[in-house]
Every structure is written in C-alpha cells, then in structure tokens.
Length: 252
Image (tube, rainbow, N blue to C red; front, side):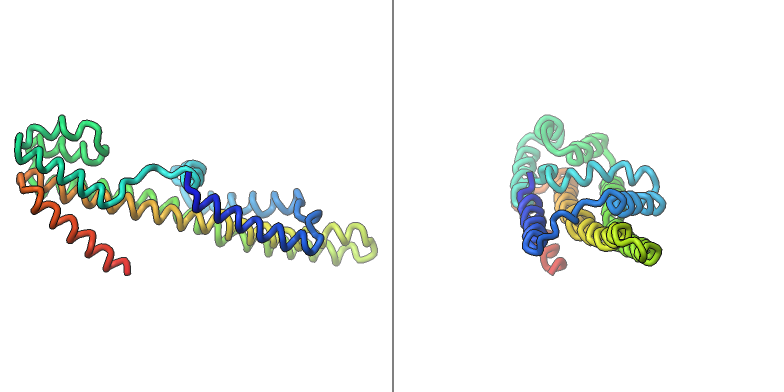
C-alpha cells in the first residue's frame, strides 16, 4: 500500500471535515442531485474525450495509487544486472535463460532476442518500441485523470448555475429556494473536491510510477546490450551509473 496516498487523503479530508464541522455545515455535505451532476457529468465528458480502451484502464489505475506495483529501485536494478553480467562473462550468453528465469518480463523478452541472435540495433529498436507503447498507454490514462480534474470544477460551476436558476424560480417559496441554493453550493464543493483529492493527485502519482518503471526498463536495455557484447560487470556498472546520473541531472 502507498502510505503517501493514504496519509495525504486522510489529511486533506480531515482538513475539509474540520472546516465544515467548525462552521456547523456538515449536514449540507450530502446532496444526491449535486453528486450525480458532478460525478456523472465528469465521467461522461471524460468518456467523450477518450476511447473505451483507455477508459477501461481507469478503475485499475485508480487502485494503483493505493496499491502500486512493486518497482525495483535503480541501485538494485544495477546490482542485479551486474550480477547477471558476471554470470554471462563466466558461463557465456547461453546461461542467460537460466539466470534470468525469475526476473522482469521485459528483461526476459530481451534475453530471448539475444539468444535468437538478433542484431544489436534490432534488439534496441524492438525494446525501445515496447517502452514507447507502454509509456503512451500510461500517458493516455494520466491524461484521462487530468481531464477529470478539469471537468469536475466546470460541472460544479454548471451546478451552481442550475441552483441559481432554481433560486430565481422559487423566490416565493423559501423551502424550495433553500433546496436550490444547496445544489448551487454543494455542486461546486463536489467539483473542487473531486479534482483536488482524486483526479489530479491520481494523474500525478501515475506519472511518477510510470517514470520509475521507464527508468528501470532503460537500465535493463543497457544491460541487455552489454550482455550481448559480453562486457565485464565493471564496464556495465559504469555505463548504468552514468546513465542514472545523467537522468537525474535532466530531471532537475
């Protein structure tokens, strides 16, 4: 479980709850028409923006923010690749299948290409395309959540306009006017809450996970090409550490 997501959500909701409880307005928090307008409208607009193959990944991606896939840290990836390089140097390239049997799927795919005697450039092109497709798929889902972050407040504003129209219509009926005013206020709350506590944080978290996964695959690609050349673990480690250092400078 990602405790950063859980802790941030608890702190944020706690702050909102405290502010509303202090103002004695907790009873106004739930309004079914407002909820349907904001949540339903936001989902509908997002579905109109993105194809179904992207939308079907949205629920599972939301869960990833709480239960992310385990991504090995770069230093551990480097150590593992150097360990494999040592085995290759000792036993030859044919030992790769056995030595990587329990490693990452991406790494095992690269090993198959090496053992199939693909040319170095072809291996690099194939694995880079694999990374590009994966990154593009991740970015589409990230964009979907970012779009929700934009649509939510807009639907909140739309609800406010609907509520104001209700107020104007029922000026001679205080009870009905109060209900319309509730819609006007609560829809704005739902829209802002959905954007700032669900949609935008999820988009940012998914981008972070994607960057970490991509870095790991880039290191594996360097390692695979090194295995094919049967380079020493020391040479490989220098290459990998240099790449990570360059990546960190770029991110800064």
